[in-house]
Image 1 (cartoon, helix red, strand yellow):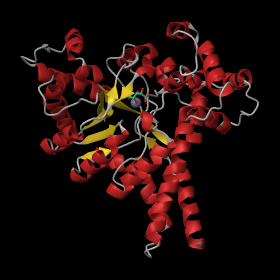
Image 2 (image 1 turned 90 degrees about the vertical axis):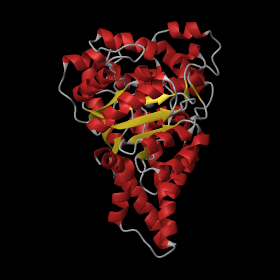
Image 3 (image 1 turned 120 degrees about the vertical axis):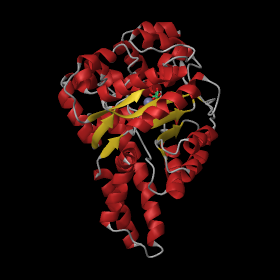
Length: 412
Ligand code: RAT
Ligand code: ZN
C-alpha cells in the first residue's frame, strides 16, 4: 500500500514536470500580431462560453454580436459566473487561469481582474503562459486561405521557435468549387473539373506552402459523412493530390472527423455540432496507402472505440486528442484509459485546441491531472504483478504521451 501511494505521487510529479508539445491549437506566433488572442475578454468570449451564455441570455443573437468584445464579456461573466455557479468545464477553465496567475477570483470583481491583464505585454505574457502550462512547443493551425494570415507568411518574419506550423486546407477539400478559382488566381493552373494539370498544380500549391511555413503536417476537419473511397471532390483530391504530396514530402495527413458545421449559424463560431462518423473511411485510407502517415481524431464519443481498434490494425495511423466536446474531465478519463488499454503508449492522449493563449494554462492543468491519475492506476496494476516501473521508465512514457511519440511518428 505504501509503495503504491508513493508510486502514485511519483507519477503525478512526473506528469506535472514533463513539458508538453501541444500538437493542435489555434494560437499564433506573436509575429502575427492581433491574430494571437490573449487576455480576459478573449477568455470570456471563447466560443465554448458563447454557446453556454446563450442558454441563459434573453436577447436576440444580432444584439449580442453588435456589442463590443468587452460588453460581450460582461454579459457572459454575468450569466455564467454571477447569476449561476460556473460549473461547466469551460467556465472552470477561466477560473483556473485566473487562479494560476495569482488573482483572487473569490471577490468576483471583473474590473479588478481586467486591470491585472492591462499590465501585461504580449511577449511577456506568451512566456508566462507557456511556463505556467509547462508547454515546450505549440503547433498552430495555418490556413493559406485565411486573408488575415496569408499576407503575414508572404511578407516573411523571424519565427518564434516555440510555435510550429500545420498546413490547414479545409476550403481545398470541402469547398473545391469556390477554391479552384482562387488557386487559379494565385497562379496555379487548376480546373474545376479536375482536367489538365489540376492535381499536379494542387500538389505544387501544397509544396509551396509546406516550404513557406515549414508545415509539420497537413490537416483538415471533415463532416461525419466523410467517405473514402468515394466519387467526391474531397476523396479525389485526397487520393491524387494530398497523399502523393504527403509521400513526396514525408508529411503526415491529419484528419479531424465528425464536425457538423453551422447547425445554428446564428451562433457563428459556436454554432457547430457533432455527428457519428465512419471509422471505415480511415481504415480504407490506411490500408490503401500504407506509405502515407495519418493522424486522426474524431469528435463523436461513439467513435472512440472504433478509432482505437483501427489504430491497432494500422501502424501508419496515430490517434490524438479529446477534441472539443470531448474535452471534459469525465470523457478524457474514460477515453485515455481505453486508449492505454488498447494501444499502450503509441498515441497522443491530448491536444489543447486553445484559441486564446491563456487557455494553455487551464487546458493542460486539467488534462495533466486526469492523465496522471489514469496512468498511475495503470502502473499500480503493473506493480501488482511485481513489475514496478522505474522513475526513468515513467519519465520516458510520459514524454511519449506528451508529444514525443507523435514527433517520432512524424519523423519516421
Ligand atoms: O475546438 C475548436 O475551437 C473548434 O472550433 C474548431 O476549431 C476545431 O478544433 C477545428 O480545428 O476545426
Ligand atoms: Zn481545432
